[in-house]
Length: 88
Image (cartoon, rainbow, N blue to C red; front, side, top):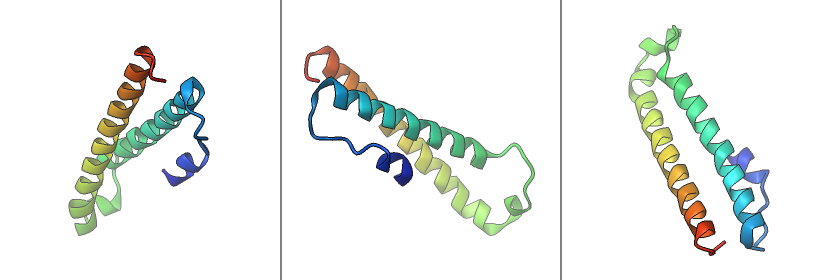
């Protein structure tokens, strides 16, 4: 995620250009979170799926990614609403 965020040194210029940059960054972050959540949900055999780490850590990581996806969608919706109302 840090790498994605660092790709977008978003200037404090505001307006539509900034909103577009933020929405592009959010789209990339959302795609990353979705892909890694799919990877963690499995559907494939991995030796480590039977380990204690997998049982305790992976469900928490999946929950965290789901929260990120929800937050990204909410922020994107707020930006879109602000743009439609003339605030961006």
